[in-house]
Image (cartoon, rainbow, N blue to C red):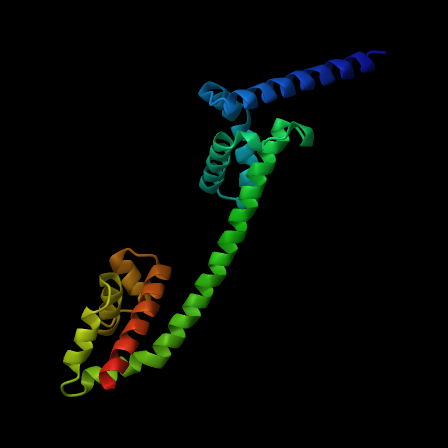
Length: 202
């Protein structure tokens, strides 16, 4: 006999919460900052927990939640009450952004792996050529001139590699740069250097 009244009371509470959420969204549409803060305080913890389950990094989860709620502030009209609750809309927004981030990170990882392969191929194809040029009488000045034409960050890693004899890992340690950055700068610098040297030869 008690189950039915209990269920009824639960449904009433849910209805009241949803009505209050819709009121907050409506106030956000009118640029009410207090309403936005209330909405954030209510759902940000659950949103962060959801994002963290997907991206598995707390700082990334925080960024996702902040971006998602910023999007809500900019476009509160995106909520359609006929399609679900405010909570489900907010959680769906966070979930979508978290999945997008995971996909972008995966794509970035694949590009980085390809870049590493390209760097190795580039080094194999052209590093010896640079050394040969430096050994030729009168050619060293031309190569150094070509190096001067490189952007500073690319010239730095190539000079450390070929004049100081450092590996890419050692360059990363000395400069404090991520190893991936050293590799990409080497790739771009070697390509520019090759073009410059081919131009000299012609």
